[in-house]
Amino acid sequence: MHNKNLDEFMSAIGYKFKNINLLKNALTHSSYANEKNGGLVKDNERLEFLGDAVLELVSSDFIYNNNPSMDEGKMTRLRASIVCEPTLALCARKFHLDDFIMLGKGEELTGGRSRDSIVSDACEALIGAIYLDGGFANAKEFVNKFILNDLENKKLFFDSKTILQEFIQGIHKEVTYEIIGEEGPEHNKQFIASAYVADLFNVTSKGHTKKAAEQHAAYEALVFLRDNGYKIETD
Image (tube, rainbow, N blue to C red; front, side, top):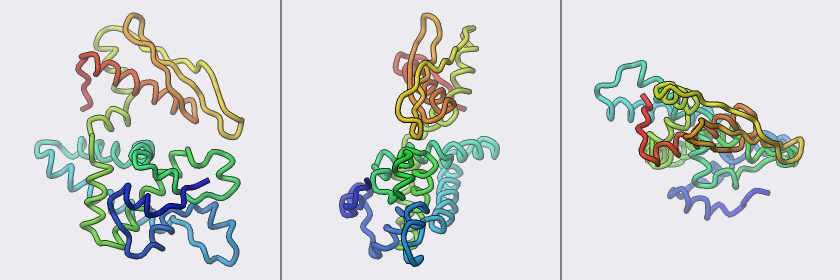
């Protein structure tokens, strides 16, 4: 069940809504709206559309002004790493957005609260809601605080398998991925993946798809390598 304490949520994000209905709208998934009669409850898809545009502008402005020597191609790839679904979901979970999303009963039972697509869409809707409620400056402040922080780590997460592959090839070794288990009910299954290189690391992580589990395992491997003094290139 979702957390209904919106004062707690506004305290967590550092922004107090003047129009609380905008926040409620941003937190309303289509599955919840569809269960309510009379069409009185609207889902967050229109706010998501708006928030996506605000996020792209703010992130583009940030990248342009903070990387004066970066060419268009690299700026485009960096922006993609910031606004992609897994990265936005990662950011949103830092301030527990997933706990406050209103889901329909079926979506709740099938693990929708942990689904990256739902969490990232709600994050974009929240940005749109802040923009409408408090203007561009407040929306920009929110994006800077929660999305554009710790970018090196986010680049590492977004393209973890490619970055790990390039590093391992550079030291003339080979990384192996393996799905070593599953857990949870069929409708909300998590896969457990390992990533290992002989005499270097053997890490495991989880994901709702095999691909996601392998990506998370690659990220854990990169963090392990970085924490142990290896230089990891993200460009």
